Length: 139
Image (cartoon, rainbow, N blue to C red; front, top):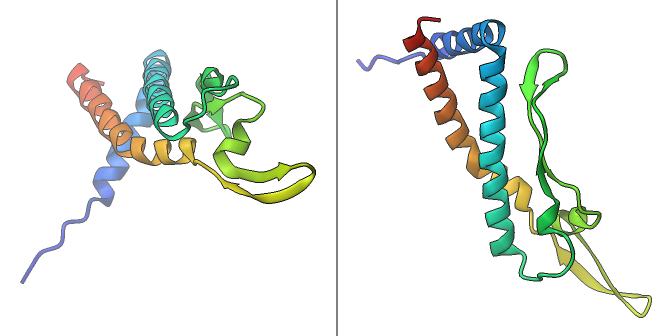
């Protein structure tokens, strides 16, 4: 008979370690998030260069990484976004209008969305490394 392996306790242990790290080492957690945000920002820019072929405007210059902040009071978060005024049109799509008439619809490139999904696995690996480092330090 096959035995099942339940990892809920292991996940809870990792969450407890991260919460403890947040209380004992808040600067290191902020530094970690800043580093991860920079990684994601680089990935987003690389994907945008490959997907968006037009080189006009300030689209590529608009990608930015925010500062770490508390989301809903208890979780740390950091935003990677594009501040260009037309970025949402490229991301989500828009109507193509010529001479006042709508002639079609340009599909969205979904640069930020796809990059975030691709980065998720790498982020979890980096969090695991952070937890291992904290355990090695004797936290």
